[in-house]
Image (tube, rainbow, N blue to C red):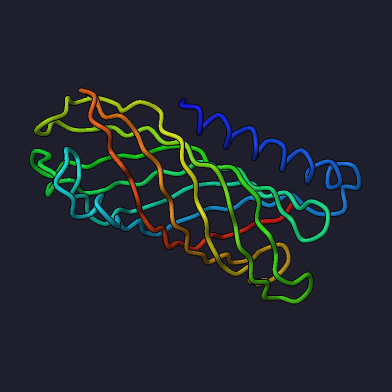
Length: 199
């Protein structure tokens, strides 16, 4: 992990430490489990660049996350996600895919405090490892751990207690070193919907 990655993790840990104690101490808000499904679309050079590994196509995306409300309108979230980018245009053999897996942690800020439909924004830190098939300029295997960031917007839509739907869209930027030493600059947009279950 590089120096920027260490600083991002330290900053996020500090923010979470300021947010979580109120929720844990008061136990006023429920813990929420979210099951996500959607698509991840490459942008910038990750979609159409000419460097090693660039030229990925839209991926299926899924994940699981936990959310814990803090004081005020802040919610801490943490989860795991997987995106499967078609990399045939990047030179992957056959129907090869980049399988990007990693964790994301951050803060979600509700833009209103009441109602059955609550808009939110989120900011977080993302880690990613990419399983890479055989392709020109890179070896088959798993990339180094990459650290980056994400920003997103969405809605929390109450359906019936304890269920809710959480549609959202977020932009992710993370760099990772491919097997063989080339740097892959992953930039993509994730659009998904989560089924949320409050405990």
